[in-house]
Length: 109
Length: 115
Image (cartoon, rainbow over all chains, first blue to last red; front, side, top):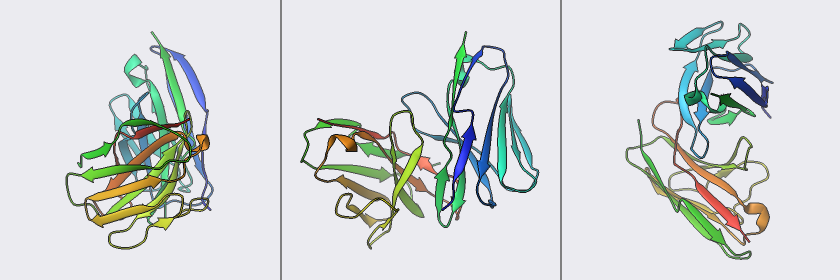
């Protein structure tokens, strides 16, 4: 079956530092989705990438979809304490969505 | 976007008992799913809740243990049967309101502790 791995599992940064999480799929994806889960909360959709090599930005967040459509990354510039949480990538498989292993981001003020 | 109401939000249950979790969506959805999330872990898909027919279960999950109903487009239940401490987890209802591969909306989850 499809597997979606993320690295790192955990990242601790000082406020103002940058952060990147990487997502790798065992299969080629039609699209990749990113979700954020705050501590004690539920996953919330951030963005969807569809095209090979696509880059999208949301304020300080930059999302990339690899040329081979098997990997993706999320980069946060100048982290803030509000960025704390777990970031999941997710790829479609049949009619389902398979979530990556997640990266927990801790931001120290 | 859809609002998903899930209840109970948390429960503490004794082993051997069963708990039914309810999920109500405020708009029509195309698909509904149930996920499980162990503390500090990712989301594992339990099953796809199919309207008016038996749910489609993922490997490792069976109907006798996790019976699911979906009597209409906007409502589903998940029962955790004959619970053991290993069933302690967060159970999340999710729904898709758009086309295939469109994003998922999640309920707030049910935090289950089995003693």
